[in-house]
Amino acid sequence: GQPTPETHPELLEAGEIMPGISAAEFQQRRKSLMSILPRNSLVAISSAPIKTMSDIIPYPYRPDSDYLYYTGCQQPGGIAVIKANGDLCMLVSDPDPERSVWDGTLADKEAALSVFHANETYTIAEIPKYFGEMVKYASGVYCNENILSPTFRKVSKIQEAFEQNKLRSLSPHSSQIRVVKSPAEISLMKRVADISSQAFIQTIKTSKHWPHEHLLAATIEYESKIRGAQRMAFPPVVGSGANASVIHYSRNDQRIREGDLVLMDAGCELHGYVSDITRTWPPCGSFSPAQREIYEIVLSTMNECFKLCHPGANLLQIHSHSMQLLSKALIGLGIKGQGHSPPDVGKFNPTAIGHYLGMDVHDSGGVSRGESLRPGMVLAIEPGLYFPKDADVPDRYRGIGIRIEDEVLITDSGYEVIICFSLVDPS
Image (cartoon, rainbow, N blue to C red):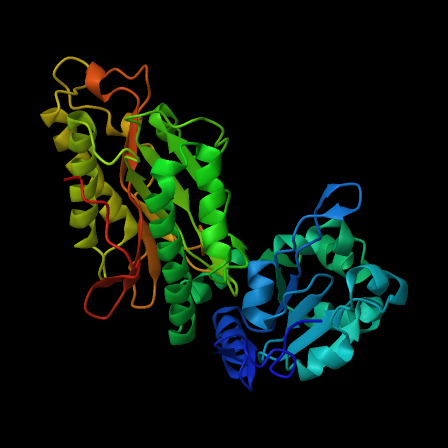
């Protein structure tokens, strides 16, 4: 079963469903969600399916973020139904004693009431007599994508709701609730940022003695997990030399050559919340003049973008400002476009300046980048410049890729950088 204050007193305090997050906060999340949906709406959120790497060998299980956010349940096989008044009904897997011998026990009806504080509970087999009436009178059924997975699509009443054209996407609405973090969430995000910060410090320190991308990828994962992280937030990007110009490079299979920079983009997860950090540094201990030029441009762009991280601004404005800064800097390096036109900045920086961060690395996907920033939002800000070996730039810059990424909490008066270690000093 799932950890509780009784089974894991070192992890959970009385009244908490997840570390630092109380049953009362989960209840408030459900009420907040229903308050922004049309009258007589119904929400149905299914747990994430179990994914296998081969045959019956499963990947480590990660809950669906919405399911976790509104229930605190970290286990597969369930559906959370939220009524118009915010009450929770948990539909749990049917008992399977034979399966539990292999996989352990899953949350049952008793746990739904006592651990997750559901108002009602049924098994999946009982859906027809429970769910049918609710769908009949609902103005719309707002659900996550997992509800249409083969596991749940075969449930007749969900199929009927689909055929009646009552199913609606939950994501745009849930994103609006999730994008502003509570004090408890901010505390967890600072903790996971600290874990990643310490892991990066140790990895950078040892990088001279471990001159291979794979070894540095293993080091950042080890250093994260021994500090309490349950898993990595995504496969680490460890690109040395020209590999750093590949945005989501993840092969991590090349030996690091003397004089190469290493770009590492990595993060980890703690109790459902993730970190996302990027650093670029020379394992040999010093930047070449060309590397330093590019690094200082990216660093300056980062610091200037921070100044726009305040309530009322938005990610589109910050991105536009970053592109103007990079364009001016590229011209200063002698990099221009066709004829006398300005350089095509998007060619050397094809990514957005940042994204929302929370339970997912790209959190709250239903929130526009043009939406005004509010206190409690957490952003990842990540300027970069990438020059592949065949880039139309002066020879000294070819094969250089540099990105820097920090996490920023929007506050009432501006911003707070929540990464707990300083940027690499190019000097």
